[in-house]
Image (tube, rainbow, N blue to C red):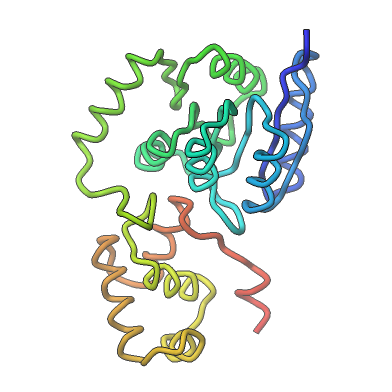
Length: 232
């Protein structure tokens, strides 16, 4: 029998190697590619078409939810397992909407990760502790959407409620830039930047820039680049 092919996308080398080593425990599984960058990871998945992709939610470049959305849009047979250091219900719902077959915490036990791989290959949906067939998953998703208090997507900006310009501003806020610096970088007025920041805070339901950064990082919408943030 041909081995089950897997691609791993995670920007932490030690964790990525740990996942590869864990999967290597089972001789039926074969890791055929690894990437530390979202865009490159998607290219690898599209080129190699693995049966399973284990993808971190927070990545430089495209985030895990965006990668999953692209894989789903391309109608690939690859089944995505999204992993995160932030295990919460809202992020899980984003993963399900994107098309992930599984969403699990990075502290998952090795035997549980291997079981999850086989579960998703069997057509099951593994969301946290829940293992569901298609009907059960659809019922679960409908319940989650019914109870959601806000929109999770809008045309042109999947999986976050910001406009493209607001997203550009948010990325600069995460980098630690001041409103004046952001205005200069984007070629817009200082007041326009202030208006965008105010809109971001309102949409996120938070009170200040720091809370907005934490909110966006937790949901995988942006990636904290430590080199950019602290080189000045």
